[in-house]
Length: 343
Ligand SMILES: *Cc1c(COP(=O)(O)O)cnc(C)c1O
Image (cartoon, rainbow, N blue to C red):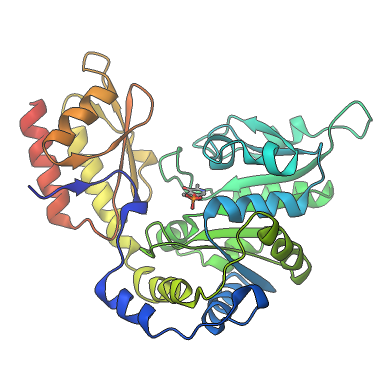
């Protein structure tokens, strides 16, 4: 029985063309800055983001944590959304590695607005932590792959300029936001002091993330990457996979978005699911399960036995993600199967 894996866009496997491209990559010692393919990737992304420099890192978590570390001092406070990846899924790293505390806000779809941020900025007084950094996430994972409205970002940027705060973008899926809105990466990135991107999600590379910013920021980030254990050697082959992913799998994200839409509309026709369609903006579908149905964990276990994998998000939500290894037939087959089970 073929398995349809809708758990995450991280489950994609490298295509044979990608593998062939990886094989021929020139390599060198990247800790010495001598891996030509890593340097090509870093230059390519710095250019695409309109930043001075970029640094290749093993994971999105490391990209975010290096950035937090570079922008703050221990004891500082970092503002983010309550559902942010850095707050929920990075193992408490801001406290563990940088000695900062997070101040989470309840933003709409994971997108706090400038007024909410203004309200919690700390006055300069020795009683308080110093607010130094705002982290936004675009698209927002727990928000259902929702796109941060660009005008909201602009307003926050004016606020942070006035108050001398740094801004970091967790752009693990900024690719998806850009394809969907037609706003290019640069026009998002120019509002931030640092931007992280993942190649290992919808773009389909086996591993790799990157962080970009000023030369000065990247110099610090380079040191912190080493300290966090992320200095890598002949990783040109991995960087090649990332270059291949950007060149061949970026534009096609639009297909994932169409598939997610079809999946969401189909789920809405099944009585145990309810998907607020306004939140289905990219490749993530978060379906609410009705209170009469069994809980999300049981539903996920049940459909797993029939060959469809998804992830429970708490007891009444299930996340489905479309990606490179999911085609239109997989979506049709998933809906047929769920219709049969939950009629
Ligand atoms: C996946 C993801 C990351 C990075 O995760 P890693 O597994 O460390 O690469 C960061 N932010 C968001 C929003 C993500 O979805």
